[in-house]
Image (cartoon, rainbow, N blue to C red; front, top):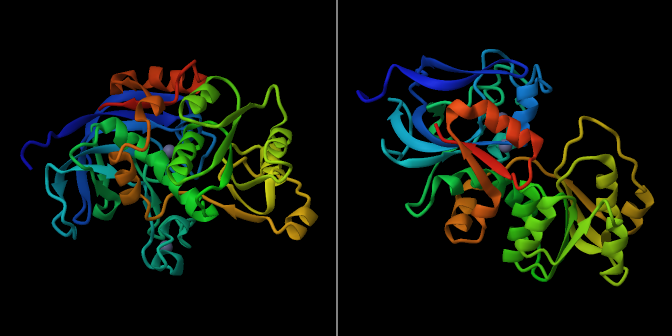
Length: 356
Ligand SMILES: [Zn+2]
Ligand SMILES: [Zn+2]
């Protein structure tokens, strides 16, 4: 393509806390890859950990590295061997997980838990984590990882898709039913996405726990009962307000061991619990008698296999309040300020995006 420049602007990570805005070569695309001109890229909580070097050497495996895994843009060029209906000029949302495509879990469709994920040359990639992402003017992805955007969809919507897909998968794990009572632990972006989805799916009563301004946003989004963990005991409140039964479904979106325990403690007999938070390998003590005797089903959940097309439809249909979730936008040049603001969780900050 003649209108693709030789070089592009990128926020390049050279080490922990060391990101510089540089002019670098536009990446060469392989025959099975698509080159996309990036329009928007969200900054995610995981990006903070990568930026600070906490996840080395897994994420990133090398420096210099380009972070950014929540991006969308316009198809600029398509590799000669790419099997795809995409065309240059299509607007697309990138899905970061690339399975090896050959192992048993990938063949089952569970490419997010690919058996070859830990093998450096196993074919699995997490774009923006183990391979370059797109805090840059151009990004690369295999065609199957690019999902077409409806014309009505804005770039802000596209950035938020990346949380809605994870929320959707969490609910597939836990199985939400009409009239379920649901408790959501943690009012971050994921918790707020879960809240809106369970309301759409017919939950009868929703509880959400946390603290600070995010609880206020949860209330605006229609949470029936917000529980400020600095003032109230979440398990006590949930038990009191469900006639001592507990809720049908708990979605844990926080991570600390005490929150994991609360999740199990507030589930009803026969209830379901989905754990989405990670906490760096800390152990959590559960009363296993309660899990056995009350038949509590506990699921782990991560990622978003096969969820993009449906999440895109849900957003296009107006079920998600994007303006309450995507709160700030910065030029690529202002990457360091955007990161600082997101990290500091200044009042009102939810998702921050860059617009290369
Ligand atoms: Zn993310
Ligand atoms: Zn695989």
